[in-house]
Length: 223
Image 1 (tube, one colour):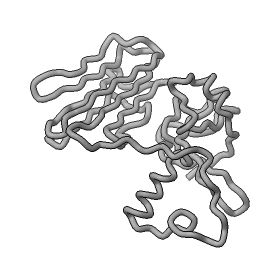
Image 2: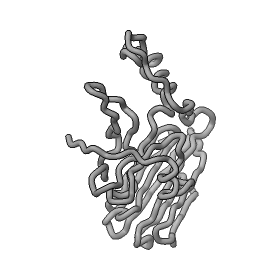
Image 3: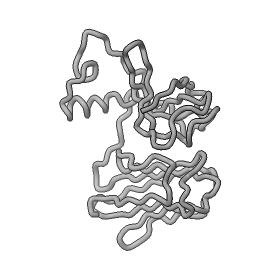
Image 4: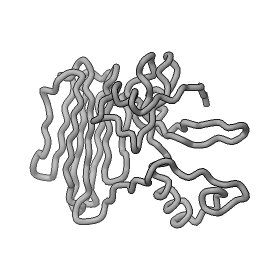
């Protein structure tokens, strides 16, 4: 395990760097960018901590480092305080945990979240939402996105622009099986600032740039 000290970057600065469509301050937080040290491919799930003496406060989770750390490009983390109520409902109510300060009171006051909780997406109902977010690299001719049902093709995304953000969503029927294929014909993944995120309902299935020759997954209870 490795760690590094990184500076927090304000929401206004992060919005200017990544744009309002990609950086959502209510649920994201920025850190790093002074040098080439920080999160990179494979670090998803790693903690962003504030250390106060012997106490580590979990502030963010690495989920969407857009390329590797480099000067002027802070990494984007999930803001833990935006999901405190959901974390408590799962850890305390569903898992019956007894973590001090989260699931039961202690002698020490627990800091209140600075932001209103944001509910996670739901998967109830006849269909589950699929979201695919892609930022192409310098060679978008290598990439294609295809979503297939049993008898027809729902998505066939090709001829993409270089260094461009794309986002596709579709609610997939739970009683059927679907195949999602994200291909990279050259096999070098999404280099530079490219990345791929695949979310099915409230579950992040993929969030990285190292896709190699591609990423494939079957979706739906009918598989």
